[in-house]
Each structure stands twice: as C-alpha cells, then as structure tokens.
Image 1 (cartoon, rainbow, N blue to C red):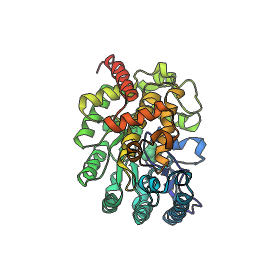
Image 2 (image 1 turned 45 degrees about the vertical axis):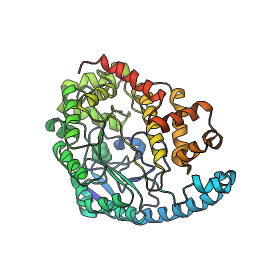
Image 3 (image 1 turned 90 degrees about the vertical axis):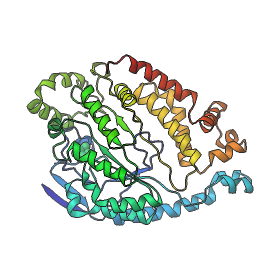
Image 4 (image 1 turned 45 degrees about the horizontal axis):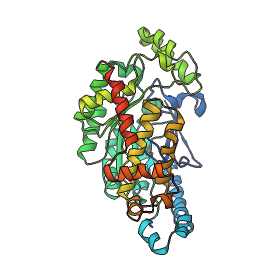
Length: 417
Ligand code: SF4
C-alpha cells in the first residue's frame, strides 16, 4: 500500500440542493483512492482519473486548512447575499423581519465523497477526517458522514460536540449480511457485524444515524434473506432508516475489475450479471427488465414488515425553520419514490424537486408565509404547488406523496417476501 501526501487546492464540491439520498449540501474527500477495496466501487472508474485506486492513497494533508478557508469565504458571501436578497427588497420591512432568518447560512457538509472513505485505514495514521471535524465544529456546521468503517467511533467526542451545536448524522454503508460474501466484495472495510455495532454506539450517543444498503448487487445481495437480515439488524441497531438501492457498473476498469472478481470468486453469478450489464450503459445502469428483483420495491416491503423507515431523513439545521424541513422531507420522499423507485418520467417529479431546491436554498419561513397568506405571492408558484405546501404544513404529507406510496404498496404486494 502506498500513501502519498498531497496538497489540495480546493476541497468542497459545488453546492448541492434537493439531494434525496444523502441530504448534504457540499461533499468533500480528504483522500483520493480507497484502501477498503470494494469490488463495485464507482470511484474506481476512469471518470475520476485515479490510477491504482485501491493501492495508492493520496492524502490531502492540508484538507482542514482548505476547508477553513472555504467556510470563511462562504460566511462572508452568505451575509452579503442576505443584504442584497431580492426577497428582502420585495417584502415590506415588517414582513421581512418576520419571515427571514438573519443568521449566517448553514450547510450540511458530507465528509465522505465519492472517491474515498473518510475512515479508511490511512485515517488511523493521518487523522485528516478528525481535523476536518474540528473545523466543522468551529463553524457550528452540521455534518453527514457515510462510512464502511468503525474507526469513526474514535471521533465520537467531536461528533457529539457537533451534534450539540448543529447535528451529526453518521450513516454506515452495509450491503451484505453474510460475512463470507462481504469479504469477497468489500474485503478491507469493517465487517458487517462491526458496522452494526458501531451504529449502535452512534445511536446510543444520541446522534442521528442510518444504513445506506447501496449498492445491492443483483443476483447476490437482492435475496430476501440478505435484505431482511440487513433490515432486521438495522432495526436492532436503532437505525433511523435503511435505504436499499441497486448497482451501477460503468464500462471500463470498474466493470472489468468487478467481473474479474466475480469470475474467480463467485462464478455462479457471472452469466446473470453479464446479461444484466450487457448494455455497457455510459452511467452503468443495468438493463432493468433483466434484473431478478426490483430492490427498491422489495426493500420498501421488507422495511414495512420489519418496521423501519425505507427513506433517509433530512434533519433540521440550527437556523432552519421546522416547517421548511417538514415540507422538504415530504417533497424529497415524493421525488425519490417517483424517480428512483417507481421509475416515473422526469416531468412527473421535476416540479416537486425544483420546489424542494427553492425551499432548501431560500431563507423563507414557510409557516409564517402560510399564516400571512403570502405563500403563492412570495414563492411565485402555481396554485397547485402552493396547495401541496399547504397540505404538507397542515397534515405532514400531501396527496401526491400518498398516491406514490399507494402505488408502491400495490407493486410490493405482488412480490413474495
Ligand atoms: S468504502 Fe466506498 S470509496 Fe472505499 S472502496 Fe468501498 S465503495 Fe469505494
């Protein structure tokens, strides 16, 4: 294994809003490359241009310093933006003071990006993620951590402090219940058992936390036995949710490496998987009709049976109105179900997604606007979308979401679990 320290020029990703999977607003990688060696890893594909992805780990030694610099800049930008906001000018002075949150803008920082695990073995030596958390704490920002390692428990002290001032949401990626199969596909991460045990401690410490069961490998991880086992253990660990989703395999080295391992270590699944990914789709999508199981629908049914949420949760930031987060969660659930689970066309979920983005970006207090009868006027929305917000504010859900859940339940009925 080769570790190389490098100097990053920038760290945080571009702003992300309306993310219905992880609910972070900026992500970052303290490392490039990942020693955990997951056979299906998307970070391994050529697109990211990281040669020897599993064996040459670039350590961004100055990541905490760069993060501090970028957060300082954002603080100034958010304050000056607030002064010149078109909304401030648009509203009467009295209205403005009631509906606008004047604190510096908070963002949810995701400290595991797509090309590394923040708690891979190198972190034990370099402690970059720990210093990143110290910086996050200084700025009182909320944090989202997604990892396959129980090393994250080392930083429980800092995470608890962050949770006091904002929130810390620590989620584990767990996809295979059986340890032998896990050892083939995720050879160097913590065992499945260790990750569930770590989640128990995270929850016991009062932090937010859940399971991202992603990716579920078709023909291997999509068995009822595997998915039920994960959901039951997630429930035992007091996970807030378990989100199931399928696997993409981009053509090139990601796909080649994956099939090489399957060929040598799980040859009975080889032909089926070749068939499913025969399309060489640019983004690695499978041929959906050839999938043995729709893992999202099956996951939905299993979650209902086990009594755990199938959806990740958008938690409330310190400066955010509670009503906005309630609306956001309902809208993002709707977007996720329509787009990912039910496979509806973009136009059927895009307006809801745009509305979620507008709410997450904005500084409006929806409950106040609703009380003042200003929703439609101030948000510039159609009466239909205004009604959706009103429904959610009154009942916590809306007809469109209830319809999506009903359709999903009907599809789930047809699956034998
Ligand atoms: S832990 Fe994540 S980043 Fe690391 S190899 Fe596995 S999938 Fe890739």
